Image (tube, rainbow, N blue to C red; front, side, top):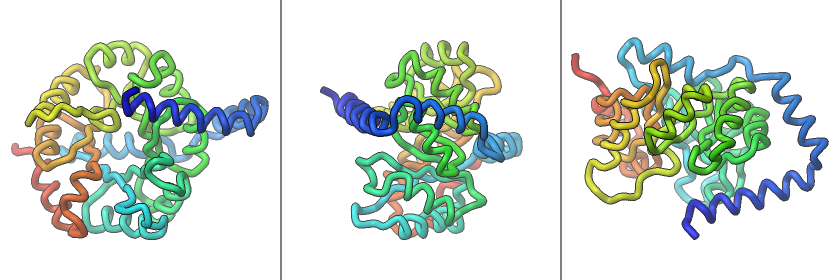
Length: 273
């Protein structure tokens, strides 16, 4: 069993337990209630991207992850504020999976309270609309973790349900065939190298994959590319990425010097005239 398969099976067990405790009738009522009251304002991240990209500016989305298992939600919130105030983050993504934090959605809520003017998304392995509903109820601006390789035929349903709630929920794709199929289902926000990632240890390989996929996106589509180095950030921007997910690996390489990271990223993603 691969690591991805093991993770998805764990998520399935967790969801099955939650739904069993809730009951199907209560589940249906909860999903219908969420749809009846979509998030306001809706689509905060995609709106931010639409405002910045025509001006030649990439939107930097910083991943907020616990540096150590002992890190508290309050400390995570302080880290998030530093990313925004010193690092130049325009949006944040908070890991909420049980493998990343014992606090789950509490981390997400705490970070949102710390930076109320910044779109904050949850990052998890999303396989059921209930998860999207819970994220919406927490007040988040979106959800990162709808992966076509994982959800398969349910990808379109998950994407449509998220959109109905007013959430930005990029769908992660790994090849041009997935892009073609999902574009027919109305998907307009795509993620690349975010959760599934590329494990091939060949210099520049991830950049080539991202460049190729960005070129296949339908006209008007929005793209979010995960980057683990300044080189990947520069390459993704040059290839046309609208937004960059600054992953934990890149953040960790700068330690506590968030301002230095922000300056380096600004230089790396500035396009020459």
